[in-house]
Image: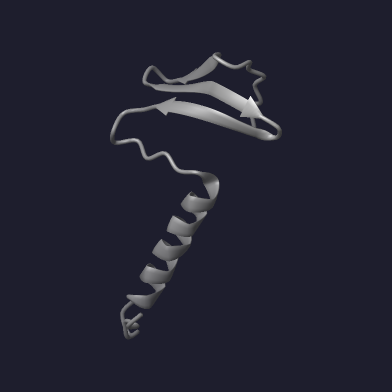
Amino acid sequence: MLVFTRDIGEGIVIRDDIYIKVVSSKDKAVRFGISAPHEVQVHREEVYRRIKANQANEEGACRPGRRARNT
């Protein structure tokens, strides 16, 4: 993992089209502004994990020989 130290107003560039900027900081919370192409999905970690878990559940429920569940 690459770790950066940035002050408020400073940022990070990924490739040529993704920009992450530190917008504010209060107590232990940091707010970021992210600019990325529309096709690049950006999620908070807990949301991303939930999406992946739901996808895994859907794939498991729809395998041949298994009946899909009604939820």
